[in-house]
Image 1 (cartoon, rainbow, N blue to C red):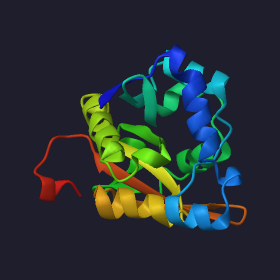
Image 2 (image 1 turned 180 degrees about the vertical axis):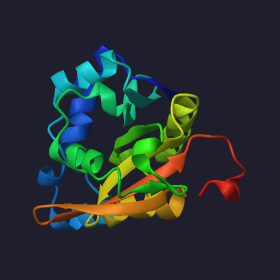
Image 3 (image 1 turned 30 degrees about the vertical axis):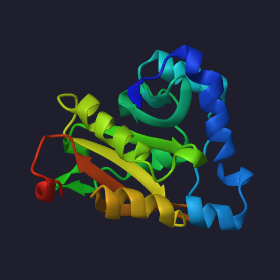
Image 4 (image 1 turned 60 degrees about the vertical axis):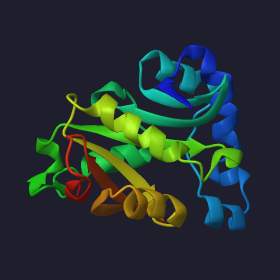
Length: 191
C-alpha cells in the first residue's frame, strides 16, 4: 500500500469512495456496523482539497483504498457547520490543560476506507501518515465525530488512542471532539 498526498487526478475515485460511504447512501444497519461520512464533498471539492495538499490517500496499485483529510483551519474560507461549531468551541475545548485556541492544530478528517480494504490496517496507515505530515506543522490533530458514529469513535479513540476533548451539538446531532499529539512519543504516552 502506498500512502501519499492526493493529486487532482484522484478526485473521481475519491468522490466515488466518499459517496459510497456517505451517511445518506447507507442503511441504518450499515451506518451502525461500518460507520459513515457526512458533508458535501464531490469531485470538484475533493480536487480542490487535493490541489491545496489537504488530502492523503491509500493507493493500492492505482486504486484509491482510502482517503483522509488534514487541513489547517485557516485554509478553509467557508467551513461547513460542524467545523464552524468546533472552531467556535475552541475556548471550551482543552488540549493538555490549555485551551485549544492557544494550541496549533490541524483538522483531521474525513476518513474513508473502501469496504474491501477494511480490517487490513488502511485506516491505521492513513492515521500514521497524517501524524507524520502534521509533525512540525501543529501540536495536535483534531477531529469531530458524530456520537452516533460509534464505529468511527471506536477506531479513533479506542484503537488509535485519540483523546476526547469535549462535545458540541448542532441541531439534534451531538459531536465529540478528539485529538492526537503530532509529537513523537512512546506508544503509551500518546494521550
